[in-house]
Image (cartoon, rainbow, N blue to C red):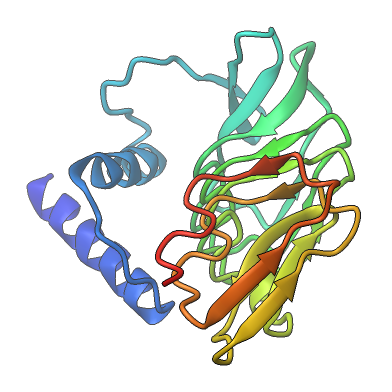
Length: 219
C-alpha cells in the first residue's frame, strides 16, 4: 500500500510538471489528492469529516442550504451530463477536484441550477474540449479547468467564462494595461497571480466579487 501511494505521488508530480504548474504543495493538498484517487482505485475512503452519497456516476454532499454539491465522479467517464437534481436535491455546486484528472472526459454539460464551480474541479482533464457552462455560474475556483484543451486552446490574455474573468493566460508584455469587460460579475481566485508585467487593471462597475489572491505577486 505504501508503494502504491509513493508511485501515485510520483505520477501526480510528473503531471503537474508536464503542465507547467509550479506551486508549493502542502501536506493537506497531498492528502486530498490521495483520498480522491485511492478511493477510485480501491473504493475505500480515507477518514474524512464529511460523508458523501453515491448516485449513478456521481457522489454528492448536502450543503447547509439543503442543496447538493457534486464531490466526486467516475474517473472513467467520457461524457458528463451533470443533473439539475440528484435524489431530489437541487445541484448548485461542483466541488473541489470533483472531476480532477478524469483523463477520458471529453465533454461536460452543467445545468443552470449550478452557481459555483470549485477549485481544480476539472483540472488535468487532458481530453476535455467541450464544456457547456450556464450563465447561472458566477463563481469559478482557481485552476478549475487547468490543463484542459478547452482553456489551453484559447488565445492569451483574459480568459472569460461567460461573465466570470477566470484567468489571465500567457505572459503579458511589459507595461500591459487590462480593462475588464463590461458585464463581468466576478474575478476568480488567482486570476492575475504572478502577472508581473501588468501595471494597471480597470475593473468595471458590474464586478461584485474579486477572488482571493486575484492580484497576488503582481509586482
